[in-house]
Length: 280
Image (cartoon, rainbow, N blue to C red):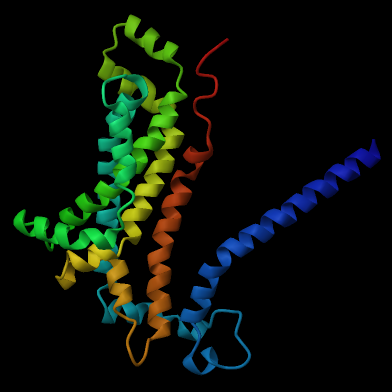
């Protein structure tokens, strides 16, 4: 009995060491951004690297906020990312349900068309979208960025949600229908709560796409006050010199909101909310 307990304790300790190692590898880039942003220029290029943040250099974050529009950039990125997430989920749920539950002529063509939209790179669509957005007065607007990002995320999210809806037992919907629930009510009251983990996962996909997108944000928006953080951060890279302290400081502030968003929804991603929905 004692041998079994000791073996179990060693296994748990080994598992904890592996988890801590993986956590360290994952978090190290963020930590190194903090170290680089708070290291003086003299120490930054020294032969012996500094592994701890420099307490005397914390003013770099204050200086960045005072000398740049990083606050506005982060706010614009948040608006685009949240708008892309909400609009993508709203537009993808019903098509995903239709592809999963209905059988109609041309369903294979519709599914193929969703895949085809992912075959064209963003760079090939910049010029035609610029012309279209110019006619629709969507240039230099965050609304335009939300719409173009949504156009790229909806096909992917639709197929992911379709797979999740396929796993929802049809018996649950039939029971809801017998109780007087309409088809639309079944989708929002019964189906959506059961696929909440998948919705959370697709929300992460849409949010990160809107948060990190650069090509359209650089091309379709020229007004400095509407720049997103990805465009503002790229502006620090110069031909002759690049202020590493500012780049790493802004990069750290640009990375943390996305990390916090994932930590906020990750429990929904890993939770199996469909478990126990049907009693045998």
